[in-house]
Length: 157
Image 1 (cartoon, rainbow, N blue to C red):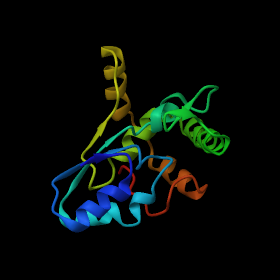
Image 2: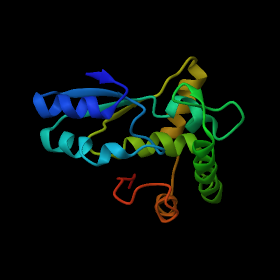
Image 3: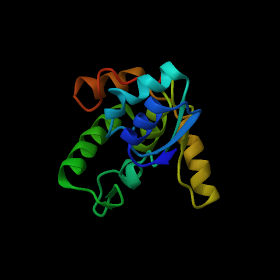
Image 4: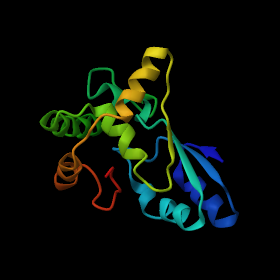
């Protein structure tokens, strides 16, 4: 099953056995509602989730810049504000926002992979560098302390 809404995957998993889901952008630094029911059920049932669109259509790669995209449209003001706050924490810890976005997603035990969109070899190499960028544990703690990340969200060790 490959869809844009975790609720569809959750309903499918409640009804049948699945090995894997492709979920576009619904478990990210900006969206963690899938932690309520869907991702715990995936862990319980042994279903994997491949997250595509983990940059939320771009804003978690570009940051809160003019013209930033969220869900394929111009990012609304509340999203821009939240991303700007996440960027403040990133700056305080010397962490690139896209590195945090990539590494956060795959920290969940049900998510073995993140499908980052790439158009060029340079973008692929950049994504690989972000995946291996060293992020201190204090960074994740600060996001949670500031209400920018759910307390129950798994983070990289």
